[in-house]
Image (cartoon, rainbow, N blue to C red; front, side, top):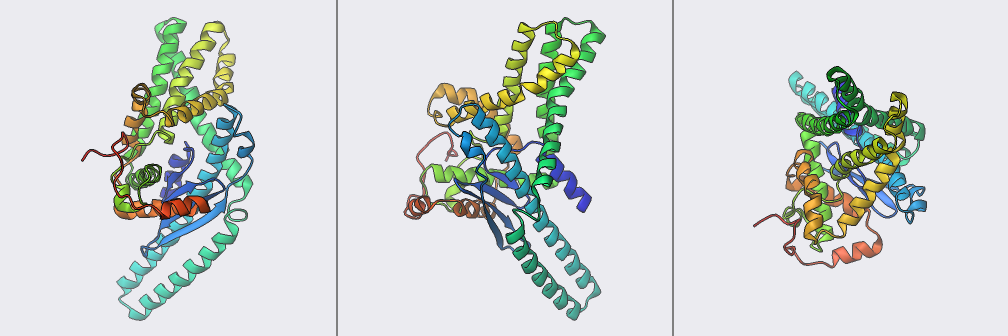
Length: 365
């Protein structure tokens, strides 16, 4: 069980989304000054922990392009912390479940009562420990930095460098021109990216995470469309959202083609080592431009041209999201409510509208 969970966490943390995200059995939401992780526990309760958002990325919020790079780095750190927190809770519940099943097999009432008591005591103790230690001791900054570095290396190796290496090998084998080799590399990059998402979506445990991903989007859509925040009102929205990390990553893949084509046009005779280096050096710039595209598109979705351009990213979210249950929407809403400012909370609590106005986000009746 532990090895399986570590493997799933590696797949999920390989590419971190910006803003809120799904975690194991729950959702992380980020607000202006704090972020919250809400997880459904084995006893059907919702465990909610809230933490302060680091301030280093906020210093760059008014600087175009750079704010996207810094925001992405911050989101990766928060995302990994949240993912590890949810994994700890899932492990506690799984171990408790195994103890209960063992007690039932032994058919001993005293043993069963003792197991329940042990579980309740352990859960309460560990929950208190996580509240005080999660932000510092439980997951030190060095561990987060190492994990984020591994995730970045995984991303760069799989989606940036491997298409170049494979494409160059095929280019030499078939005696293709440099531009034919570039087209091949670009095609391979998109194929590897899409294949990765599709293969990950087939893993049974990940499918549940993708349901929470859908719940996250529905809860945010309900808030942004001025309806009451209940599972029923949230379910009227689609699971796709323009600011989704899946959409962001697809734009990164497309923008990488544009940037790498520019490099090929300006310096067509770069040695192979310089070509490898160029692929890595411009990644922050690609991420910054992609962030600005997402940021601009999010406020212009009423424009038919913008919706048309952004549609591939919305379609791709059919792979990384699943229709959530009402219970999963409840978890997402609980996490979202925790990060509201006092003014936001007052506004949300004053709402009485159950049905949203027709838009691209609302499901067809």
